[in-house]
Length: 156
Image (cartoon, rainbow, N blue to C red; front, side):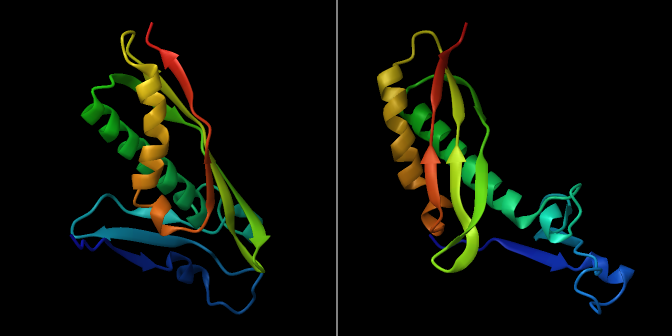
């Protein structure tokens, strides 16, 4: 099953002037998704790289893609296994560093808090974490080191 996922990027910062000075040009971008996709996504570089902190940046989107793929895969596997999950939240964190001689998102830590129904099998729920990671399309597409530190709670 080969699917294509398409987006279109425009350098919206061009309206502020050309790339004459590397310290002053606008890093603002606009990404749209096709055909027809979700609303436009205003983007920029990370603030450390002279971008607009009020806009999404590629590093944040990579971390959110990893987090959301893990969540969706986990929830699917839980449903298929008959494990009743009543809530799922994640505080994910990515780190830029030089690895293998290149600046990259070298590691991402996912910290899901998974709330189980009172009668759910916690051992089965815990076993699904690694299975979800192994089946996550996005994590299978990157070389970034991904650590998952789950915490389980009971609905109460």
